[in-house]
Each structure stands twice: as structure tokens, then as C-alpha cells.
Length: 506
Image 1 (spheres, rainbow, N blue to C red):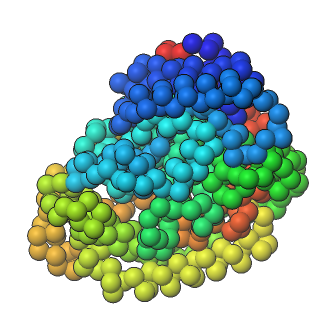
Image 2 (cartoon, rainbow, N blue to C red):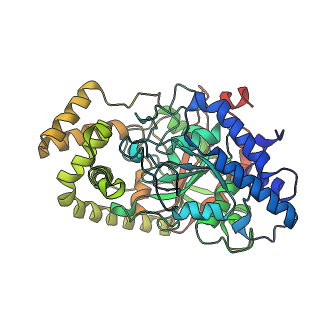
């Protein structure tokens, strides 16, 4: 085992391979060993493809030996992560020949025949996919507790969630299995788990990264990653977002941006809870602490009210979300070839799909119009400011099971799917969303607007749980966010902060 595996990010691991200080097979064996050591505790990995990954690593090492090592940074970004072990989220990013269950009993035997674009690009970069990570069923929930695989747990405290829906990715990175893992974000699913697990998570601008499936209602989702270092996310965005053929770190790339000084920014400081009713003391403390840090670094912080009707935002988001659920659940036969059955889906997912079927068609035009208004409002605001600072979550990581539907709620969900009365559906949707948004109601706004947004790990509460803060920039402004993130990373380093599980099993 390489003694310094945990001390390296993905870029420096690739450098070890490129310069002959470690082999791809050695790094893979360490990642597999760490998976076997920590996954029984965190339940982050739901599919293993070890043998194929070992064959790829050995083949790549043989080819590298024949061709000679090359440690030069003049190589293109396309091969910059060659030899690094990698994980793919088990949702929306098919890997040819590997099951994609998406946390659902209906999809548990579905084997895609083609790679998603993000998978093709990851493979081209030399990233070695050896396993897939857990997600909430069909990415519906901001926590990762699929009935099919069981709860995924937070390495900082196993009684708490790592967030969702990319909870498996975040838990695996926080536990030191890999320094960088694929994730996706349709309502906060990169930023929420990054906040819960003390990691960096950047949601790119809408359209920045090519997606596998036809666009969902409102085009809310996008793929990227969760990482321990800012520069890893920057380089991966180059690989996924169109800079793969350029020299590594060339001017104008995202990796270059992460290395550049961050000029003083005008930052709108938003303390509104957005779709949540209020921010907890921990979330407000994390936000105030971040504002002080950013101000101390020379940026101008100005308190701002977004001036948005958050009730209308909530309704629009839920309409778009329910239409997507309908497509994945009630129209699942298009994908799997099998008729969807009630017993194959969790009751909350099944109920949301029926809401989409009953209310979506009439509600969709108004939801899209509200999305347009939100986007216009935030675009106008970011003509005056370079970035927005706000909370990532309304509270620290919740406990496992805390947001699961009660027996009464389950009964109500079964009733409205059996007898789909519009008034009862609206009531159920309001009650269920109030529960979810009370904790995870600060990220959805930027999926609706399509702006880039990131969660940065700057604060841990008195119980040792991470509480991230969120920054958003104008559309296409990832470079601004990456410069700021790298500055914050240098001012208050988090890379060496390790959860108790990671320390105990290093």
C-alpha cells in the first residue's frame, strides 16, 4: 500500500502514476482495500466491478511501461487523471454492461448498453471506474436511504445522513476511498452531500456538461463531481465541459482559473432561508462565519434580499420534479421494457409520480413561466454582483430516518395514488414538501435558474458535523467560483480534515 494515498488528491495521484512513483494497479488495489474496510460501515458502494478495473489498470501499466513515463504538464487535460480510481453514481449516468438500479427495485436488473457522455469522457481521461455509489431512489430525496440497498451513512457520524441524492459519492470521498467521485445535481444533489460530508461540490451551469438522457422538465439536472480539493473539480470540469483537448492548465481552462488570484468581488449576502422556513443556529453561524472570512480576504459583502416569492418557487420546482418522477416511474417501460408495478417503487416515489400525472400537464406551463421569472430576477441581480453567498442547507446533517415518511403519511400516499383526487394530492404534496424543504430548501433555486453554484466546507459545528456554505455566480461563471473557492481553500484549508471513521481505518 502506498503510504501517502490519503495525502493526495486525484491530480497528485495521477502524477505519481505518470512519473512511475506508483502504478495504476497499486492505486486501484488501495481504493478497493479501503472500500472493503469502510463500506460495511457507510454503505456507499452498491455495485463492484473490481475484476474489470484490475484488468484495465494492469493493461494501462503495461502500456505505460512500454511507452515510458511522462511527468510533463504539457500533456493535454484529456489524459491528466490516467490511473486514478473513480466511482460513478448509480443514477442517470449509465455505464455499458453495468447494472444501473438507480436505488429502485424496478430498475435493479436494468443493464445499459451504452456509456453516458460523462462516462465516456471519464474513461478517455484514464479514470478507472471500479464501483458505483448509492443514491436515493431515482434521486428523489435529499438523503440517501433507498429501501433497495439500505441507508448510506455519514463518515463524520454514522447516525447521520451524508445527504443526497449523491450521498454514496460524498460518503466514499469523505471516507478516503477516492479523492474525487462522479455526482449529479437536479435540486442540490452535489451541494447537499458536499455540505454534509465536509467536501467541495460544484454544480456547473446548465448545459456545461453533456447529459445522457433527453432533457427533463425544466432541465434541472447536471453531472459533475464531489471532491476533497478545488483543483480536482476544476480539472474534471475541463474534461467534461469541453477543454479536454487543451494543454493541462492552459490559460482559459478551469484548472488555470483555480490557480489564478481572485480579484476583489462584490458579493450579495443572502440570509433568507429560501424554500425553508428558517435557518438553524448552526447554518446561520456558518453563513456569518463565511461572510467574515470573505470580507477579510478583501471582498465587498452587501446584505441583500432576493425579492423572490419563495412559495411560487416551491410550487414551480415541485411541478417540474413531479413530471420527471412520472417519466421515470410510470413510463419506466420505455427504459426497462417492463411494466412498472407499485411494489417495485417506494411509496413516496410512486406518489410523486402520480402527482406528476394528475397535476403536471396543467401545471407545467405555469411552472416554466415561474422558472423564467426566477432566472430573469437572478440574472438582473448578478449584473450588480459577482456572486451570491447563502446557506447550502437550513440545518446540519439530519439523523438517519429522520425524514422518512411516517406510517400516517404512508397511508395518505397510498390513498391518493389509489383515488387521485386533486385536492388531496395538493395537500399531500404541500405537507411532504414542507418536511423536505425544512432541511434542504436552499439549493433548488439555482437549478431552476441554471446558474453555477458551489458548497464550500468552511465550518464544523460543536458536535463535529460539517456545515457548508453556498456561493452562486452568473451563468457561465464557474471560473469566478473556482478562483474564490481556491482562495477560501488556501485561507482555511479543509483537505486534511478527516472524519473519525477515516482516521480509525487509515
